[in-house]
Amino acid sequence: MTIINILALLITLSALLSYLNYKYIKLPTTIGLLLTSLLMSLAIIAAGKLGLNIEAPARELLAGIDFNETLMNGMLSALLFAGALHVHLDQLAKQKWVVATLASVGVITSTFLLGFATYYIFPLLGLDIPLIYCLLFGSLISPTDPIAVLGILKTVGAPKSLETKIAGESLFNDGVAVVIFLVMLGFVATGADGHTAEFSVSAVLMLFIQEAIGGAIFGFVIGYIVYKMLRSIDNYQVEVLLTLALVLGGYSLAMALHISGPIAVVVAGLLIGNSGRRFAMSEKTREHIDTFWELIDEILNAILFVLIGLEVLVLTFAETYLWAGLIMIPVTLLARFIAVGIPIQLMQRTRSFSPRVVRVLTWGGLRGGISIALALSLPPGPEREALLVITYIIVVFSIVVQGLTIGKLIAAK
Image 1 (cartoon, helix red, strand yellow):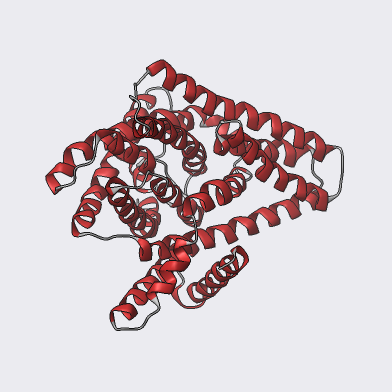
Image 2 (tube, rainbow, N blue to C red; image 1 turned 45 degrees about the vertical axis):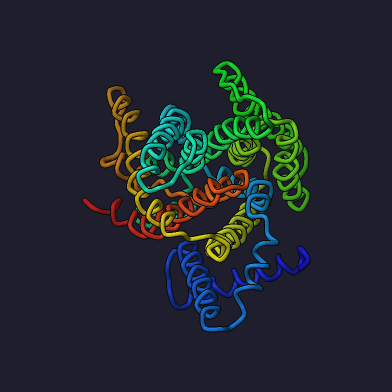
């Protein structure tokens, strides 16, 4: 099947399931799409058990879609830019230390807590997974994805400061987590090549600085160039095209330069969404750019969550993997609670926080497509199969259960 045919099928499925959800089910869009596509996948599997040969063609179709490539080198840049475009820099500046701490120290803490927890828990379930793979699992499951929860936060009237913390943290911790994951994946690749994978703190630190700091600087530079270009003209068609080039071209160039594309796009999005919106765009341009990126965001999110639901068709659900996934749900939440709670407890000495902020950030830290995409990029082998299924179970629970209940937690007095 050609790329055009695959894209046509995914968009058609996304449109139909979006219609069904909006018309009849009435769940938040992303959660509704995930559930309906998941139910459709289970129906296909059940039909196969009854002798209807539709499971094999469905599996073949999904096998032709590289989820990791599609998300990490396709959708992610646009999704991050669309998210950053609507984050107010003045609000983010007020929360800069909280966001920076949660997106760096919080992610690193969560990575190692989960890595060592899984290293000791998995053998009890009969899973023999090396420590480096456990740490890789910790890094890929740590980034939060609040796509589904942000709409709920606005609906229940969450404090603006809380909304900024969740949005800001997720935008940056995606980039930080990807950097940590790639650093650790490098040790696995080195060992697979037959060479000794030596752990060097200085080498890891330099790579982290190159990826994260380099990505931020690069994002500011390309964002500033496009900002100057936007300011010099007043034609919304050209200006929309410039933002699209900034996202796709900037992300691709950042990845080619071995710096963090996600962080670069976020920084560029913050610059265009604030200074660009205020000083470089007419009212007509602002309206068209907002409409364009909101539409792109909705379309890509719809496709992404449909893909997550369909991915169940190509996973190997061994009983051990299922139990491991279910056990790791509370462990992941506990690690998130500690990684969020300790920094906030320390910062409470110098600043005030919203009531129940730790509980809200813990339960509202949804896992999403990035975690699945990173798990799919693991080297082939039994470790990959196990970690992929465990990640999938955590992500589905996170989006459906946490996503549907976070509003009640925020609204509770």
